[in-house]
Image (cartoon, rainbow, N blue to C red; front, side, top):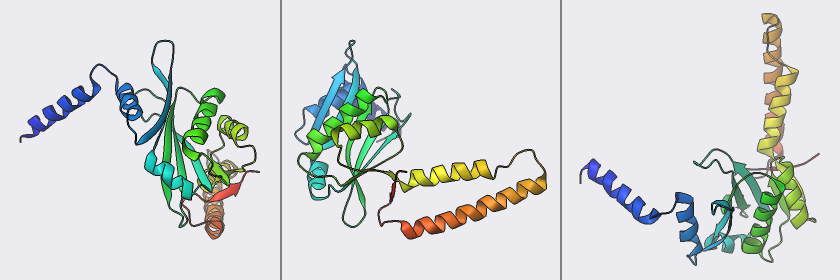
Length: 216
């Protein structure tokens, strides 16, 4: 089969799957009609999808065995609709992570995050008990978690801690239009500090890719 025919066949499959729907509408329809997924979505007054939470049954079963540590983070500008995608992950007993659920939001406000956390609690966790949430420092997400899980501590993952430390180190030993001698000295000080910081943080890491640090 020629490459042109392959492209044509792929376009035909895409058209057949989409029919009159947009890609996100087709995704919602397929997942909502499947027994292998738990899903919840809402639409705006114009009928457009403005919230879509979904989780696979295998992941839901897995988290019942490993509910202790839940990571939550959002990605941006990864789809044509510019809808933030919230990613929920779990951590196994040997420190590996696995995807639990995903949620498209129309915006990162309190209502949307509360809806996402509520859907996660009701459709995924059930009676499973979480010991700790690892997140970034998003205020709206932390507020939503506090409302639905008031007894569960929220910690900041070490990746975000390291980024914050790196930012502060760059401010303290900045390189600008001062003398070349001072710039060189600041570079060395920053390099030396970050090396010591990375060495210290490695000693504190857990086996999991996202280690945990208390929020202070």
